[in-house]
Length: 290
Image: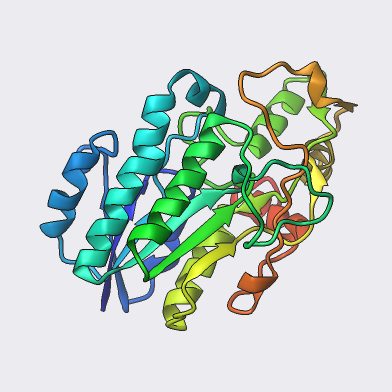
């Protein structure tokens, strides 16, 4: 039996990971909460992991409130970079496999075709810069790792600290009968966290040893506006959605205009579904579709 330590167990991805591994007796998932390991105290990471018996560490924890990160850069780098470096060092010392979750926001958005794993990063905001630094730390201090870059997540548990994910927000606003305006010039790949959890399990089931960085996102891409329209269409909620430019929304953190990830490398291990198919499964799980 493989014993998995799971950081960030309470989030969308963390909860879906627990669900995916729950019925497989070949794995034991041990959720690790902030009260046990506070990533804002990276000096505690090595000591904590030294006391644990585990085969795999999955790090889903991060400080991911993108605009807030602009105001708290020290916290961003402490959680997303420095503590991650300590995770990598500890896993290296103990010879343990590390899965680390990163983001499409490590890229600048200046390309007009999907980003490859080998493309140079060029984040536009503190969150993305701190996550890119975390990736570099993992690669510098450990050899036995998988970095999964993910994109525009939606999961059954909702986004912790963000008041629910984008899907839930669109449905709530539409049900309240309020006008909906959504950015139409930022392009990404909406991804169901359950599919990421399945991909991680596939890597473990197949004992993949081609370590490195993988883009783990739904197949295909759309704008946030197109995503909103499809959410409401599938959910059968009549609403008028207006496309607007990102320039209409002034935010502290800049967002990439194009952050689509090429997932062909990962597809050799696990087939990620098209984003519309992933959305249908999510809406079914949430009982919007019957």
